Image (cartoon, protein in one colour):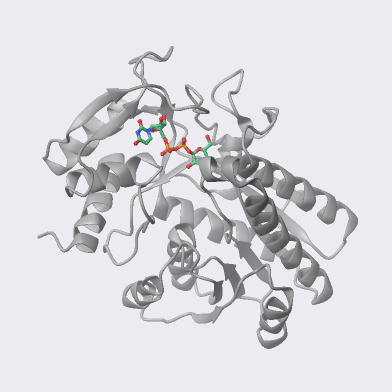
Length: 341
Ligand code: UFG
């Protein structure tokens, strides 16, 4: 079916928001997820927002035979592959867990696409491939830097696999979306991020601190060579990011892709420092956070943000949501999860 999409990791943070935008755009979604870092409640959230419960198969994408049954049973032209582990520190401690899961699942997907003649794939890549870039903002032509973690390496390796497969195989076209820092939650507060344990990422740590789950937010470094001494990132609203996947799929279905493999940065194009984000969260939500300055976190780059010209011009996509709305949505979601009025 032309407008069928397989979404692996569709119960997760980015996958669930993308599923909502796909359904709103008239796509029929089949989700495959093994709940390794997600929760079945996100399917309820998707249904509350869209009125549609996507078809769901509980399976691990590393299990090729289980995945094969999905390809046998469902007719879709396109795949969006989110299913992967994503904790940088954990990947350093347990590299094989990351190489096995992130690469095997991706190779299974690509092989089954070839076998079952399903032509289009969007791959979740990351700004991590740019490392500590020499020039900012980064364009898609900015050279990749050697990965500093097994997690980052799996993103680079999967990009390369996709480049090689699309070059060799007439039947497959692919788009890698390099995400910057996805944040926020759906404005209805029906879906959002559900990190397990202590959050690694800034915004979940902020919202949990505001909720009293964490005592104090540590700001990792105030002595960087940046305007205010804290790191700068490109924080992209999760709904804006989700929409980028829909336009990427539409582009391939319409045959508008200019090459068999394309790469797009998905960010706002604007740097925001950690201090600015924290202050922005406090102002948008009219509250005060308990904050302390801590040592730099190993592996953090001082600054990275996107040049989004390519995505703006070629995909006709741009980030639209204002940062304070995104930060209000993040807090509304955390309150809902915690049952805070
Ligand atoms: N930060 C804090 N305190 C925290 C958490 C984060 O000060 O409690 C700071 C970090 O030091 C960094 C910024 O907030 O400067 C953003 O940190 P995140 O962990 O939210 O995001 P990263 O930019 O480190 O991570 C992103 C993606 C990863 C990707 C990584 C590569 O989320 O998937 O970039 O650098 F691998």
